[in-house]
Length: 450
Image (cartoon, rainbow, N blue to C red):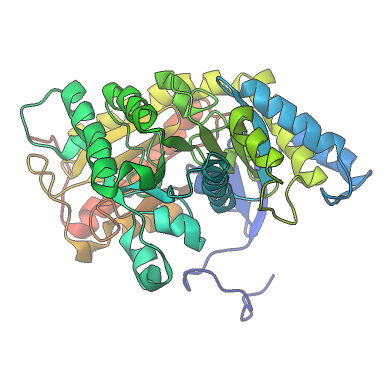
């Protein structure tokens, strides 16, 4: 295609070449240039590109039907995907509501929680506590839960203003506490916020078990997770896990919650759940929450494409690939390799202040000073500049501002779960070239870090 003026618009005017095709972890533009998809798009393409078994499942469904409205028909594809999803979930999470994306999954989770509270005579409960920074979606309801200033501030007058507590960024703390005690400290902030807001007004607490775009693969101390569950139970508050990015095997378990033995009350899924083959997501909850809502007249919520048979056929094939190809175990094993390689970069680049993550959701953060964890000057735009350099070298990564969206720079490295150790080495080779170029361009330098 030509570079004629486009009628499309997205976030910016940043030009990109036309995509020609995808193969495994690689993408090719129309000039033939190859890119390693080092971030799985936006942490979406968990099973890689152009998987033939997923495409065959979609083709078979297309030959039958591509749409059947859920109020008019049940479909084998949606029933099969719901059954498979429930089988892969921990605990009593056995009721599935399909959506088309992550923001829809979060909105559905919150509305489900609210309607359940009403069935229990708890109309006073409406506040959903979340963390700052965090990211839960771009629709107004999900954005109200999101803690990322550049995205939220323009719309503040249009939102209710949900309460926030600090995200457990313990790597920034300079105190004498152990990581165990730091985890408990951050968890107790939830209890304090519940008491400050009034327990009878708090409906739910929503959290990313491993941080996504806003905090860059942030993992809390182990002590944090169980204590959060205890606090929610103490006050009868629903615990919602936003597993839009972490779910579908990304962290080395089907849900990241499983690393800590946590069973949330509601889970939001998307991204890797459809793995980029179709827009697909789900809100998953136990029958104990769903059945009272249905008994009271039904779930007052829905989307036209909820349970679309074409999307569900693709989603079922994706989950089958995760199982039959051992991709969740591969994410755990290759994640250890990847994070080890990234940690090795800290010896060469003094401006890398932290490396973190779980499974194949990893990140590194730039700093001006490792002792104080002061971020680089905002004017360097390091979060965007390194991404551009890597892109020019044929590596796709994903970055954001770390400190609430206004300062700091982190970079997510989250390749498809099919990746091999040799392909991780390919990523690291290009990443080193890109970091060297960035260091030279900015004058930050390389060498043995102090």
